[in-house]
Image (cartoon, rainbow, N blue to C red; front, top):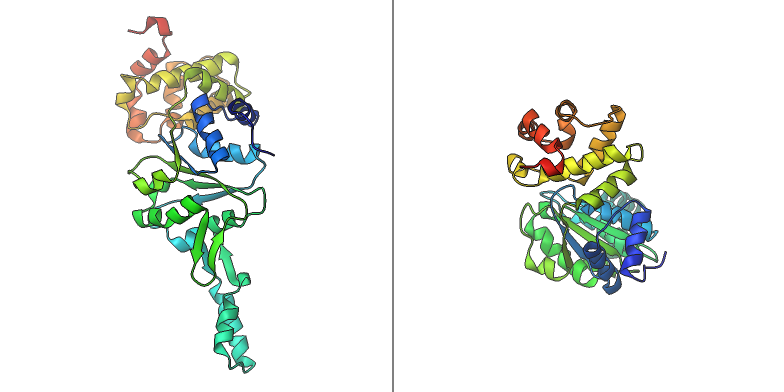
Length: 302
């Protein structure tokens, strides 16, 4: 599929695959596509950063390549490795045939067929129209890995000592996500467009729940969106280590449908709190009294 020609067209295309982006986010994505720049998305866990990359791959009909970052991630796991076992077999075979030109043998073992491509190299060598590369939770990697990414982010190329510079066959659509467990280096941010992805407004979250959980009644979907939205608001949010994200809203709605829930009440909230929260302290903090307050109609709020 060709790139959407307007921001509105991009919004509609994303909605067609179940992703509801507000105009600010859609504008950031549109510019990243048009300017062929990486897009850095920061925000709380569960607000839809990873899901955006998946939705884009569907909208653009491009393969999704994911690089999941973690502490201790090494360059070879992100870019390439040599198939050492195959190389060793080749060298032993050459020795067995009496090959005396070891320089030639060494050149042979660094041919393309011995190269194991990891996500960055896969993205650079993906055929037209290119791939969508998701560099997920880049804040979990260490600072040397950020420095390693700069060549790719700035020029869509990487340097492999045995081969040389590998440039993109077709420019990958590149999405970086960060939960902001630490600040990223300015050099990374300068090479990317930036967008802070916040929790959605109630109407957008309601649309997401309706799209993702078609089995939920209109009333139940609205109650889920209102309850979770109010739970994230003050003063309730102060009671929790982390408020539920969109993913938790959707999973909670699915659970309520599975329980044949018609109307959410404090008992149902207590029974299903482990879907909204993933920390024991947060589950305990969602008391029955708090659930009663959260379930009150908006016009009775204190």
